[in-house]
Length: 208
Image (cartoon, rainbow, N blue to C red; front, top):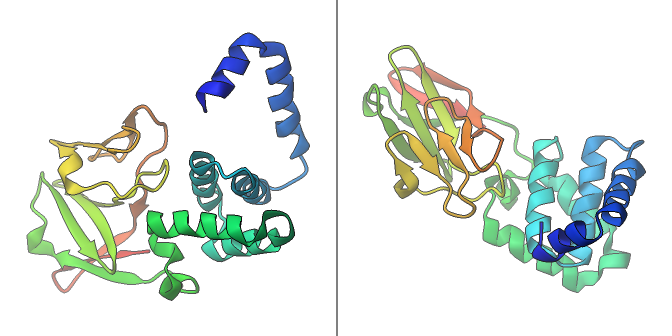
């Protein structure tokens, strides 16, 4: 939330509470995904980059596909105009979300080779690149966990250098995660995305 909105909430709490209640109630009869896509469009209309990233992430988390996001932007062309759609697309390209890459737009989830099982030592965190995506892998005595390197907040690709011990901190907004469990332990509330995995012929593979 911006400093200006925080100021208005402090100085005019009754008015602002009513306003946010109105916005929430206005979408009561819409499914969550549709409501999120409309929110994406409104953030593009006012060209609020942080809000666009926030609601884009929420829409994807609630089941919207990259193709649906692109269609929603183009369907809003009469209101947004080409310049704002290009503005939003430039942010999407900068974010480099794997699912939005042209070759992945219509792709179904599939298994990807990550590493040799021997390259994943017990009790340690490993970092790999597979099929154009970075993943963190934690192996305990009993299990292997494969996590997307992208922060669930605004899909920032968290670098390997952001790992200290078993704590991973996103450099963008400082969401911190326990790499053993994937749970967010500071600032945010959503866990890292975990991929299903398998070991086959001595190789670790994950599906996305």
